Length: 117
Length: 117
DNA sequence: CTGATATATCCGCTTATCCGAATATATGGA
DNA sequence: TCCATATATTCGGATAAGCGGATATATCAG
Image (tube, rainbow over all chains, first blue to last red; front, side, top):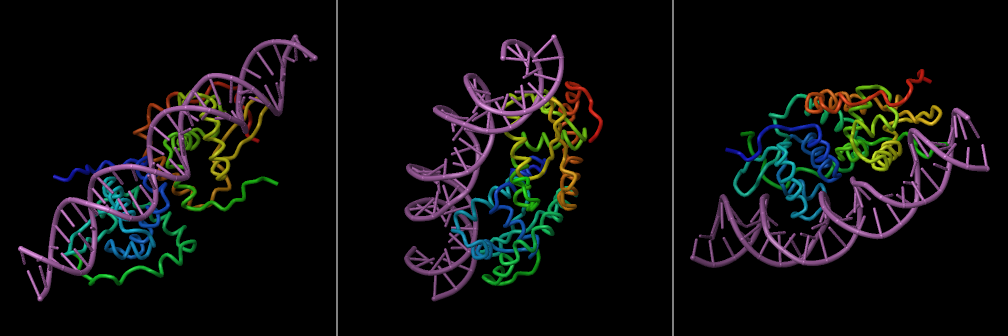
């Protein structure tokens, strides 16, 4: 069984999104649907260990889900997110879109596109 | 002129709400509309200086507005909040309501109710 | 002016958090 | 098996953030 029980609270969500890197990662996943770690590394322009660490936190809060495809691990917003959380993310991502337009231009393309599970 | 220009970004909002005390304060204000500092102090069960410091941060992000009435300063959610931010707060407060039911029972009543400005 | 109450700010301290190089683990191919 | 690539985790150090007592400011009453 997974260690992450699906009990996401508003406080947990806010704390996770309180870090700008994690917020940006969520933005990217919201925009592109699914990205592998190397995509996120290049889009965020941060060391791999930093990105991976933040992804681990997002995983721990069950904000994202991961799927391994060969060497690559693809992340996406957790499809089992509570409705309220999904709505909050929608609002935030929409509002943040223009302020992060540059971020969106440098994602996707590092690894072979895999069919959705 | 006020030091706080009304340019609230999703990152700023998330960072503010990332602290649990500030999130709770916002919960209380969302629920009760307007509260003075002493109400918040008693509801949050924290030292006055702590509460005041957090309120200052919320003010700086223009998440709340304050109104002095004699000795008391009444805080409320900033009515000029961008729509997206108001919607995010609505979602969060609704979702957090039951988990913070106890919090809601110990607010209001410390200072004379003043007519809305 | 003096004292009481309410709130804001200051300050040193403690703790949480983030960082990124180094290292460990997992996978695929030769 | 050995190597290359992708990702995760560890670890020590730097920084930010929160804490709350003490103090400053503001308002009101006498």
